[in-house]
Image (cartoon, rainbow over all chains, first blue to last red; front, top):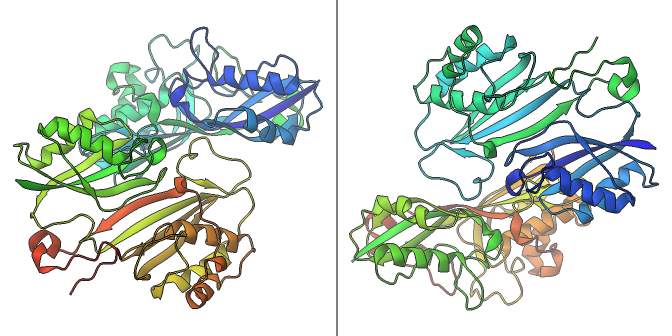
Length: 268
Length: 268
């Protein structure tokens, strides 16, 4: 039995998210069906991130176990012939049996894209949130600086978030404005449910002047969801990069998995 | 009767091109249907460029005549409520009755996008040509310099091109390489049928080492289509910008239309 790690890119528009569900088509289900056909036995996959309906991934990482004889680096070729065009496998490699795509990840980068102009876009309709009212970049950039570092992000989650601890560390929270495109890049060790979309929604409300540039700082103190803006729509969000420590590939047993309930990496 | 000029963005994936056809859905047909519904009378539109099936437009310009009372700047709002999401109107303005979106255009910028990496992309599948073999940028960039200026582009057209003269002037032919993305930008006074796609196909063959960097120069001398590479696929191409002389909006009657058979502007 071998454990294989795939890098998977997908456009989330047509799917009910990453995770398998009963009555809706998920990326996981499509990938498992094609992998099962390729391997000749039922395959169950584990993804690094359970992206929501409409969210895209440039670098979802996915592991599974198989005893088939397909060389790991041939999986992209075989799967891309079977998969629909909105899912594409970029890489396949063998990893140790104790590797885990989700519980050993050391961090992720998400990108949130905003199109700030009067009328919506045809070409960017599935990957940008269209905000028709002019936004001011300076207060938004000022606000993002409060996010860097280790904070209690308890206010930054959808109602009903199940995380036991809500302390997270962000190493990057950056806004690049190119004409009418606002590209928000956020990197952290782990994320709460809807955390990046709440950050994006708050950035827009700050850019509109509806909230002060210290909104994030106040939410860290009050832990109150109401200090923050709306949850921005899913289709502007992309899982851009997933990080693992070098040891995850060499000696994963030396690493503690992070608690699935907490979804926070805890490496020694 | 007023003449209205619209700026229209579309993703060409679902359409048989710009121009109305008998048995296939075109962008022109969809736009004319929605405009006719909005104006309350049959509307025929004229586009600046007859883009092929699968080709996109960020800045197609379209004129039409109407006696309806809709203020010109309200057309984007009204039409975007009626149009499918892959067609979006960005601007509406009144122009003189002698304005012509096609025959008064002074030039256009096209963008051709190439994705140069092993496996195809899910997110960029409709807007990038996927070239899986590594390309060398330096010879491609060297080759593009030969395109600048006024030349006989007779070799740069699809078989059966109807143009009477094939002399065109290019002011820009630039390649920007960002990681695995190759973005080719070409600006000229007018273009022959498939001209940009033949340039893109030749750039790729030069990047592969299958053709020498002086291929364009040799094609100007020999006027032989065989000196050039394949016609690159339509879906990598975008009509990015259309230019008009200031006079086209102020005093269009003082300008000579360029001959539709030649499709070359001829301003005095």
